[in-house]
Length: 178
Image 1 (cartoon, helix red, strand yellow):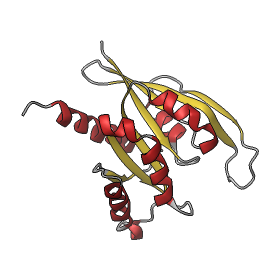
Image 2 (image 1 turned 30 degrees about the horizontal axis):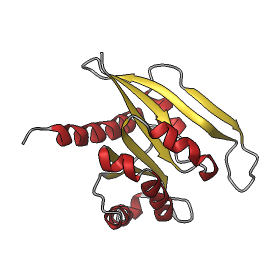
Image 3 (image 1 turned 90 degrees about the horizontal axis):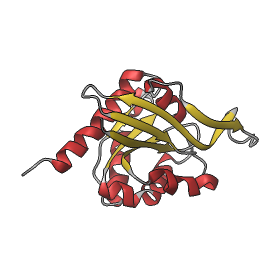
Image 4 (image 1 turned 135 degrees about the vertical axis):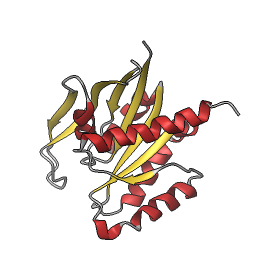
């Protein structure tokens, strides 16, 4: 049985813990602690990692890792990125500058993204703001990247599985013979 590591990253509150919880076959391991920053409207925050597991139909095992979202825990980002097969970047469109948030993750995970696959999932995006997805794609292009950008509700298991499908399709395309 093959095992692969998939990384979920993004800002605090973007839904990394929720996404992993939605699809994990085991009770997720979390390192959430009480949030003591009142400017961040959230009761808890991840300070180490989240972990879950998912078995694919062919028997391959996906190890799902979630990073802490706050930049003060960025040292964990590179530790968790080691050996990852691909990355899902979760963004909260309701934040003050979600495009700047995207740039932070593209820069910090540039090496991983360049050698694997990447999917950008935007949450809290009103239906009336569908054209905003184009702005995220433009930001990716500014970083020299092309990867799927989709609207997602990470509470929905089917949508999170769809993100993984998009990621795995990219990876299959990278190794497909010419």
